[in-house]
Length: 314
Ligand code: UDP
Ligand code: MG
Image (cartoon, rainbow, N blue to C red; front, side):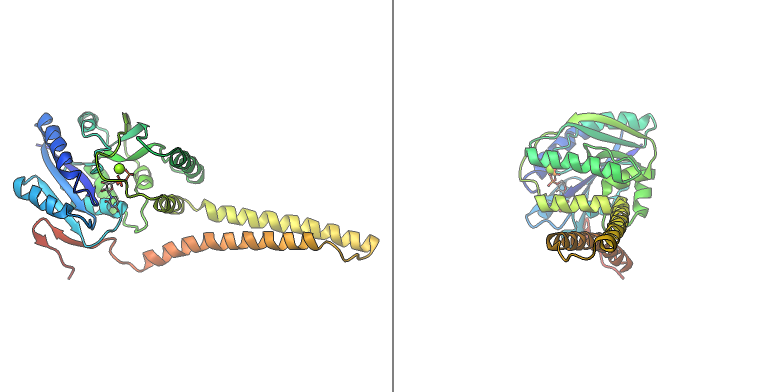
């Protein structure tokens, strides 16, 4: 019998877990032809999510959980999930039921047809502010232009991955992860299905504006070096234009003599160039920071428990 792993990152979801579990039971009952694993990754929740998971585990041996030693963020939590997933395929879904489990039936059908990565594309985005939606769409189109791989807009992490995708993803161990980009980067046979994204059943989204902004910068710098190229081109344009401008002044001075004037022009040029230089430095720093983090060679996360077993690193 083929085994399906449901991979669910959990961060402060004590209110949603019982509801989620009930919906998953329905899902598993509908698809009795598979063996199931529910793999919860507790990403350092500060509420009682872990107790809740322990209780579920005690009642139902199909529940497995990995407990991370602190909050590492959803991207890393998913990596931990890939490491511990045992199924022949793995469905990544959110704990807040914004990803309807009913869609998994359809994903499984496509998986049987031989697709490796069946992703869910949101037709609607659920309740969110106008600004957030605009910014998010603008970000996707920017990212698309900057990197060579396709990063699909309106596609989240909700998807079914064949085991070979999971094994491949395990080998991509960068710390600053932008998993959506990684899914696209690994390739394999993809298939999209559409769904309407609902609202959270309880709790609130843990993504503040600044966390999203961080994720956006992460997304760009982890899947593209275009900002460096842009800085180069900016520098080039400035050099060329200042060279031309310089020649103009040289000729003008030779012909008409030197009239010391143009203080505003001077200030504007200095400030403009200073701004561009700082910007370029920032861009370079962004990449150096990434190099710095990766060269330390630390594990991406620390798992403190797998089910009842305490984990340590010898
Ligand atoms: N999550 C996580 N670690 C975090 C933040 C979120 O594991 O630091 C999980 C969370 O429990 C949920 C999923 O990631 O299962 C999506 O989180 P959320 O609903 O807050 O994000 P949104 O739906 O707003 O994108
Ligand atoms: Mg959510």
